[in-house]
Length: 352
Image 1 (cartoon, one colour):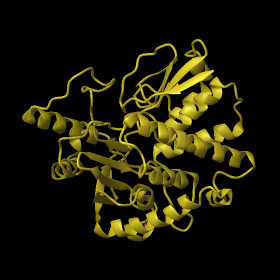
Image 2: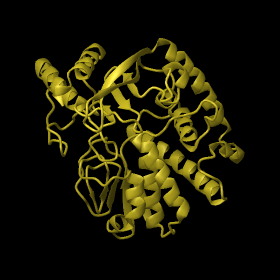
Image 3: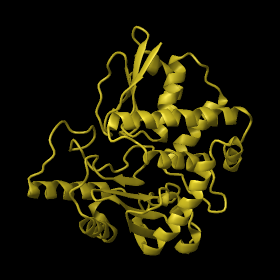
Image 4: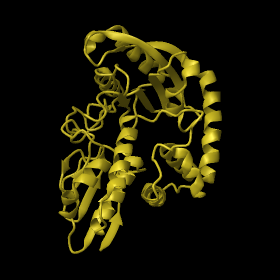
């Protein structure tokens, strides 16, 4: 069996093609395309979809060849989905630990990544630090960099699966230290916590008034806003930061400016509030700003949206409006403008 790998941008709309398998990208759920980032997707992460639907993988094999295609710079869900696809193609059996790991990846993809400073070593934090350390040496070429991320991710999964097969509990992340190959990652976790403690000193802390998922009014929750945090796992530390949030929930709302043209706004998926309507408000502002600048977006609209490159509003069943992310090619909205839109959203919920 000949396996190859290629990568496409996030949000890419794929059409099923023989000998190609799109994983965690493509905006469809069918033979050849296993993605959950669209309204009609099942309530599962891509890793789970690939694990439970080997027929959608095997249908694509032609002449003992398959190209597995995740999105560029693949994350844990995409890497695990590709790993499961490889297992299917190579005829390796699915077992209980695979289902256990898929459940864990789905929790991570939903945003359940809270870290306890007293017990910070988890499979998720080790993976994140492995990727963080890797990024320092990645080539500029997107395909080569993505291929290296996938290779290192596969190595991580090989080790974790063996660790689980040995009878270890996925909830006892500290036992990962015993593997020995993760010493650098464990040290990096501690360093990242120190970076978070520096970040929180310059973050803006405030009460965010957000709509309840029940549709019955709104509630104030601990929130913060920060520009370009140094900590790679800022979101996870903030979710577990009971001390600075002065609340047992930690920081429920996070507004993070990742770069000059990317913002990620999110709420803890376990909370009773969400961000429904915020993505629409930002998309309207994005369209108006681009028209003003003469930088309109062109091409086929992303399924379910009125733009080829919209703000992602978390409308998939997996995310349930708990995350809003910038267009994949970046936003024209600056931080000050975005904050004004967010404040209007908090104070004027009739935009829903």
